[in-house]
Each structure stands twice: as C-alpha cells, then as structure tokens.
Length: 352
Image: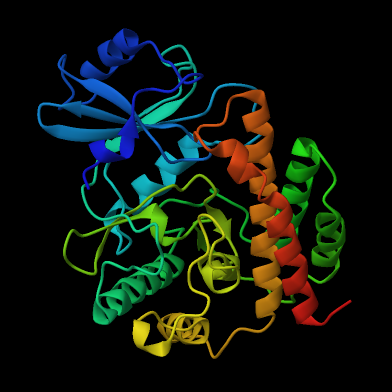
C-alpha cells in the first residue's frame, strides 16, 4: 500500500488555500514545485495530515486542526522540534524540512517532513506475516522504544523540552483538566479513577524522551524487513517518566480484542509469534537495564485513563465538526469503555 492509498480528497472543515500554500512551499522546500498536488490522510484523530506529491517525491504536512483548541494542545512545533533533534540518533524519524508558524498560510501552524513509503500495521495480530515475521516486528518495536528512552535528551538539544521531574502527577492533573473541559456527559469510572491516580502516584522519578503515543500504527516499517523506518505522531512527546510510554505501548494486551485502534492481542496462542505482555516487558527491561517494573497496573490504569480523556476530546471536536478523522464521532464514544478498563486496572493494583 502506497502513501496515496492512505488518502482522500481534502475533507469538509479542513479546506485550505492550496494556491497560497504551494506558492509558499515552492519558495522554501526544495523538491516541491508548481506541479504539486495535495490530499488528506484518512488517519489522525488530532492533527490533520496531508500528502504533498511533486516531481515523483512525497512530502507530508502536519497542521493544527481548525477551531478552538485547548491550551498547549496540537503543538506541531514540538513535534517538529523533537523529530529534528532525534535525526542523528538511533531512533528512526522522518527528515524534517520546514516549520511554518505563520497562521496566515493555511490557517494554523504546520510543518513539512519527508514522506516514508513502507508498511503500517493496523491489525496488531499481523495476519499477513509468519510467526517469525510477527516476532521480528514486535522485537524491533520494543528495541525502538528502548532506544528512545536511552537517548541523552540534553545532548540532543532537548533541554527545556519538558520538566524532568513530576511527570506522572502532572500528567494526571493535565488529563483530568482536559477531560473536564471536553466532558459532554458524565462517565462514572472517570470520577473514580481520576482521584485514585492522584493519590497513588508511584514513588521515585525518572526522565527520558517520552513519545506519548508509541504504538505500531505510528511507525512506518521497511517494506520487507523487520525494521522501523520512522516513528511518527510526536504531538504528545515531552521529557518525562518512560514507564507510562511502555504501558501505553502494552495496552493491546489489556483491552478487548475488538477495541478500535488498540485491541488485538487477547487470546493469542503461543505459536502465533507475538510475545506475551510479560515477555515484551522483560525484553524492554533487559534493553534498558531494569530488574523489573513495580506498580505496573498503575501505569496501565494511567494509560487507559489518558486514552479515555483523549477520546472524550475527539468526541467533543466531532460534535463541533472540527475533528480531523472522518470516524471521530464513533471513536469518541469509546471514552466510557476506556474509562471502565482504567478502573479495572486500578482495582488490580489493589490500593484503595
């Protein structure tokens, strides 16, 4: 499947002045010429993403969505900054080409990066691959996350990209506020899990580059090899505790198999090739020098709570008509299910 196969015509509510955009880009991004065409990617619940094709080359534009936005949300400038900083590390990212913070070009800030042709896996059971192929994909995903968390973020110029202490309580407070601002109806499980998370923050603190949305769908894999060509969608990235990143990456083992965008790994037999959650976590620990992970259920509960808050925001934008994904209304309605799963994980933790 090519990049173009992942696109549609620009959707209602996301129209841009194409002539103005291309006139701007032709003068600033080598390779983009007057023959350029622009289409919109189907995916992306948050920042609208567009494919620009010119002269046989593919470029990708990410922009803030239209409408009224939460403070600090949809920070495409931060996405650009972290990927540019990671360009010389072991973490594969697309090449960053241009950042535009002038709202007058397409209505919001945006950036341009190279387009990567490869495989994107949305069915996490990887039915098209052999057991060995599946094992290879999960192993390289695990290694990529470990490599990210081992990057010296100060050395690559990300001093000030985030606060290196207090990430977990700060994130609990942030997503609690985000949920309250976008709440369209009450969700009882959120009312239970939010205070539970606030009073049970694990002891100890760590700092690493935290992707915030690390999953297979946000990676482009080599067309034939078990190798990541680029990690995408860094909107939630910051400097913070790495274990919530790992827990979020492990959500497929903690939700029903049919949970859209996350589910798929419940009930697989050992011969399928995909590791168990325990084996996957153990591989990460070995790569990062850990003896194990305490408070695992807390981090899973946090990741599901944050997912519920994000889905609630998608739902609210869908009601406003500004969500970037065409199925945002249906996806947003999953917030209550995610909240219920978060509370179940909290109960497995055992603390009141």
